[in-house]
Image (cartoon, rainbow, N blue to C red; front, top):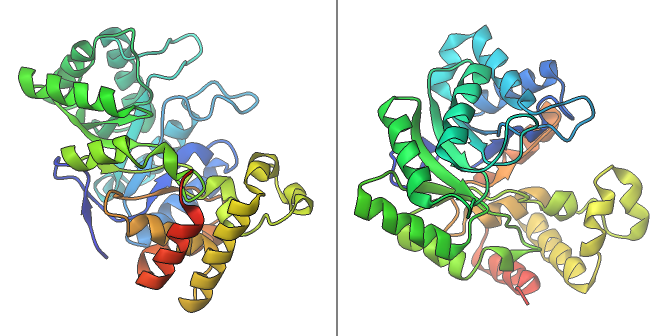
Amino acid sequence: MEKRKLGKSGIEIAPIAFGGNVFGWTADEVTSHRLLDAFVDGGFSFVDTADVYSRWAPGNKGGESETVIGNWLKKDKSKRNKVVIATKCGMDMPNVGQGLSRAHIVKSVDASLKRLNTDRIDLFQSHRDDKDTPQEETLSTYAELVKAGKIRAIGASNFEAPRLAEAAKIAKEKGLPHYESLQPHYNLMERGLFEGALENECLKQGIGVIPYYSLASGFLSGKYRSDADLGKSKRGAGVQKYLNDKGHAVLKALDDAAKKHNANNTQVALAWLIQRKSITAPIVSATSVEQLKDLIAAPRITLDAQSIAAIDKASAPG
């Protein structure tokens, strides 16, 4: 399977990333471990999580996802070298804090290392921009942690183009680590959130892009085609905004491409992302092995130019 470099760090990953937000939430630990085994056995390696996952679930306080991954690694230490572990800090953690100050990052990295049961984090990401902390302070802290061997590379999530450009300038002038990756909100229904200045900045800097909400909360699977379908899952309410002329046009384009390529809409939507020049690996989540196997089949699909043009036209921003 094709391997792609995550920025200029030398870290290589297959073109699908597993989103660990479900671990300890909609997937219990036993199921999560089965999912991780299936993901690795399928030839994939990049597992993305965050310290804040999944504090939103009743009874959780954050750190649950990292703990599930750490327990999986503890069962078989040989697995550590088979995966690229990515986590984040910066969002509000109860009784811990938030932001990208030196003190908070150092504390967060040590806590994540302990929960993950590992001696290094392959990709440590700024979960969201912190305009109250100078970027030089943040990047200098990351430099210390790289030197200490606690993290290998750094990435950003939810940053705007000017702030990424500023970070790159500071890193170059001061000899500090630069962001190797970006996690933006990006899918066929919301192309305008990434395309344009942000995508151009990533291409300019050679930043790897690992988008989240790749399937627009499940809408692109084709599961939701009318208001009557919204009750099919708890996520139904979140996709109602897509039930419009554009949404139906996108689903029609995906339907046609899926039929042509002997695939399904989910796989085609992911294949469209994978074939885009700026994208390294879309993030997907699953709560069953069967669902995961369906998702990780997407890289085997190569969309023809006609299908891409039809999907582009239906999903065009604006």
